Image 1 (tube, rainbow, N blue to C red):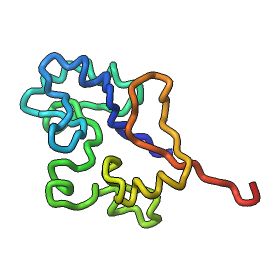
Image 2: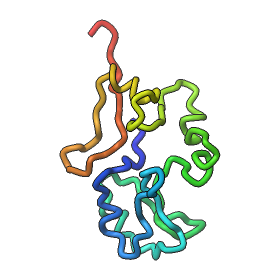
Image 3: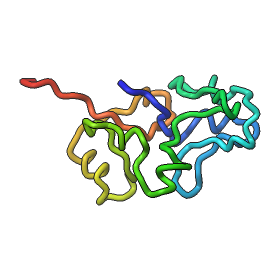
Image 4: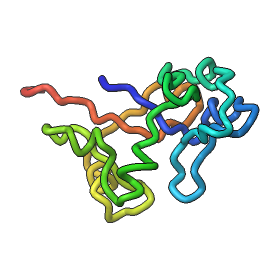
Length: 134
């Protein structure tokens, strides 16, 4: 199972960031990091229960998947991983838009959230594979 930033509604990484570099983008609601404000203290890395945050070796700031907010999303395209997935196993969209493909898909498919018992309210959903004949 591919595990990336779960885009938690109650994100521990955001709560512990002393400089507020780790934050929710007001326009999109996506958790991201302002590299100019990040002091690489690693508090967010320790706080993340999904173990998906890391220090970028180029800009020396804490990072995690932000759905390509500064590149593809800015250009109104899907995140690079969604575009590149040749099996259409990854879907991206606005869950608040009932007419979006992702909302319609989740309306008819069961889904799970990883480690939901932690209370972080992860936004990512996983649709379990159904075995044939079951």
